[in-house]
Image (cartoon, rainbow, N blue to C red; front, side, top):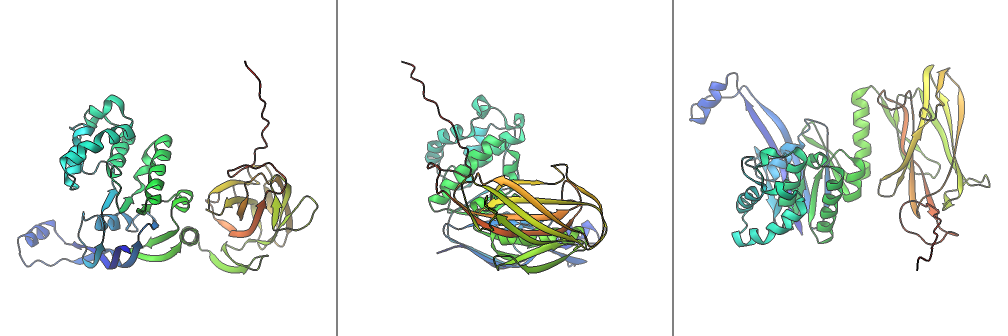
Length: 408
């Protein structure tokens, strides 16, 4: 069943040459705005039961406006929103709280505004207080709270009762690491129970861990809607293009799959291969086996410096490891045009069983902030299998030594 449906949604604000004309318009006077400033326009998408969608986009793209429209804080200029279930939202930090009141008092008042009965509210209060972990501050005025403490109250309130749709803005970034972990566990438990999620975040790992689909908003429009990793790839390319004039080309990787190459083209990754300990090119390795990642690179311009970096990600897009030749003190300086190099990176495959992707890039410094010469998100895919190690779970192989001493 479709839980939320957005059809041709748009939001515009009237711009007047003088603010007094706006006030006159409120009283029915025939003052016309100079123009309409469209924040969002022609947005259409749907969220199904139990579906999790990430909303991404740069500052000013219209993400917060979209969330305010979905939660009824503001009304649309055009289009419509159809919702077939209960909605809970965590938007701007502190929204709806009276900071002269305690957390307990704010929760009671806010719950009533959310339509909860008084006896239901008091049934949930002990659970909310326990989840907040504020101690005696739970009964202190909220003006004495830090932003992280405010976040705890807001999240505990919004998630006290499982909604059909939970909307979470980037506010969770304010909380401490411990509470972030606790919050995401709560979100995942809601997902397992059937709640849908609309999650705004710039954190790729977080988004890919809990959302299978993503929507990119750019300049008030939906630029792309699809698999989370693909949308983040496209978003990365947009950022690159805005920072510097770049080209994007599609190449064929060694396993005959299409890959997206982003960069200036001043240096390019020609080949990328994975070799096992017997120096045989492979696409699957055993847990703990020494392996070698080999990349051939060619320059097409004279460069002050050349750095190769790589990242290894699991099938959920979570980063397992990454480094570059600047961090290892192996920067190539004053590189001439038409030079060719082979980079051989050797390491043990200390990963859990599963599929992994290698992201590889060429740039000019420790970070890629100056731009890429070449960048390939899914340059190579390989499998890790456990053929000879003892059974284990998790994303990495630690090869532990366990000693058992009899104490009595």
